[in-house]
Length: 157
Image (tube, rainbow, N blue to C red; front, side):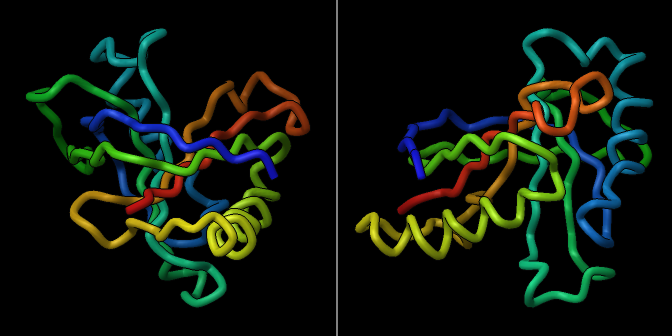
């Protein structure tokens, strides 16, 4: 498993929350894009992130919380279900997942249960605005599922 440690700058994001199975987060993305694109916030510099708060092996799927996020400038006005937050910077373990989103849980499990214990590092999850997140590197509507690239980020102490 090839994992890199990267020092990330804090990111300000706009998001729409989905509560339910992680693979049913499409409606949150649709709502976020319906707000962001007309406001010229979907640019080549925009990062597309997904923040999950619950372990689907511990939390019933209908209670899993997921935020569909895009990076935006601080002070960007929002409305409706669109909110803003900051994702803390710092050290993150980063693993590049190649393939369909349905296989992401296996990559997360390998990172948390295999790589982390042998790395000598500790997770920083639970600290202020330190969350695990996924960065979607290509467009799932125009990319074959086997060619999807997702950088998964685990915060480290």
